[in-house]
Length: 317
Ligand SMILES: [Zn+2]
Image (cartoon, rainbow, N blue to C red; front, top):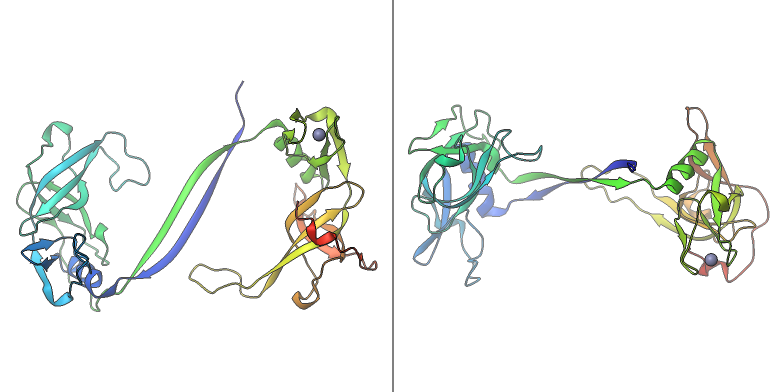
């Protein structure tokens, strides 16, 4: 049996400041130069603001030029590169000790074939034509003593910031219950599954009753109501970090559905100013039915009187 699945991606786009040492290192890369930093009788490359062994402060005044050629100290072969790898053909990741440095720099070696790779081999950088002040300004290292590529001028201004766009894509299986739940939602309906032993009702994507360890399936389906009561809420105040798309504070509410003992968490509440969001507010589901599949837009007030029940706040699930 093949299992249905879907892909999901979480992204963390952000910027970081580089500081005086890494900033100088990145700026030098745009000039096709490598900098290390002197700490006692050794030179650390890539440079750091602290000695990794003694934790002593290191100063940008102690930056020294190293390389550009170096020696492979250790390596591993990547036979089948993926989308996130620096090269689209087989290559080596290597720890490279640049000439004049005492520590190693991690980078790719574009050797062409695994047989070419050896610990102790000499390598030199192949610079990109366009350099931005990032370790990828070096396209890869290549066997030999002579740098390749490059050209053009270095950065006009010192490089002080670096953009990160970390992301992870993963595959999730879709269970039969989740598939049916999605079908119901596409019709603007909430699927519930009722345990035949204890009678508790769960959201339709659930696979089992955790109390009785009973598997739940199509034979346990019930339709959940479209109305409920807010039991808890959070006002989210968006911090304006780079990549943030929200500008104004907005609520997320927990809704206890009528008749069945089911709470929908972190729901969107619409048409209610944040200062009027409250526990006990009666709400109903609002669906966007303009597309092929209905989508839950959020919840709007029904206009009914608030529910006065001090136990409501204990219901977050
Ligand atoms: Zn049960």
